[in-house]
Length: 399
Image (cartoon, rainbow, N blue to C red; front, side, top):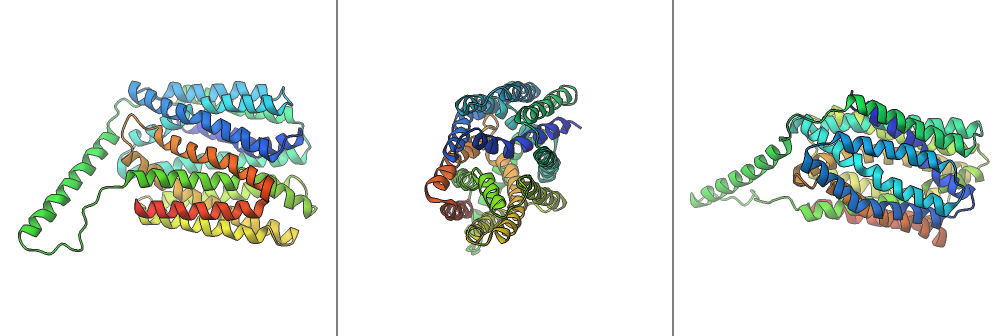
């Protein structure tokens, strides 16, 4: 039940994710300004992600940061409705991003500490799938509001109201764990396992037994962190300008403008299916090799979007929609796996590092994606994203 507030929070942000870039264009902004807004917000959120994670781990208090995030989002989204200035919108969005990330690290820690290690994949999959349904409903709300030609102010009011509901529900339902020790136990288990394997290999070699097929290797944490940054970079390069690309091909095909939200509803639906599969297979923990395969497939589908940029309007909408559905599915599996791995390899006290790494890549991609699209076209965006996904694949293979 404690997840219910996050459900409504994601509804608000699902609606905002597509509406906001379209609103920036509507009030006279450009792709470049969308990129500046997204990248500045992410850059500002990077140090605070680490700070929120450090503070919640140090004080063993998580609820207060979740409440801060939801309440700040409520107030700032309400203020959005009173501005039609792109510069002021960038400022408000940047402030909101700093406070919004306050719930991310506490949420991850709550899942890790409320459930045992063997249930982490299942728990992360359930949480992400549950909140992805909220995101999907938010997109459906955007589709309905767009179809009914609602003004921007009611849309921002709705986003703020959904976050207010999230705040009130979390105030009642979220509880800090009585004891915080699960991640520490996992860290000890990994160290003991490594030492045990080392002793086994050494004793076998002393006895003259060949151990050529047995390897003693620690996780390459730097490769894992680099892979997360590159994956986030590629994703942001691709998805920051994606609503504008979809809007353009929908207009070219003379289809209703509300179809833009419908396309991203299907993308979110792919994510829901991915989380359902991840939860179903949670007893079979995903391996590092499966993570790299997911990243490789995502790169291949990014290259497939090159065809969508060159096809006829209707065919382009169809292919782009199909690719976005697959993207949602693959991203769900990737996120569940890497969240669980991060709770193993990132020590307590640094739980915000996962969001920092995602933010570093996201900031760069959010700036580069719209800039490349505006300067060189979407074809170059898709090529660039595909190449960076392949670099992320290499990093995860090393890990």
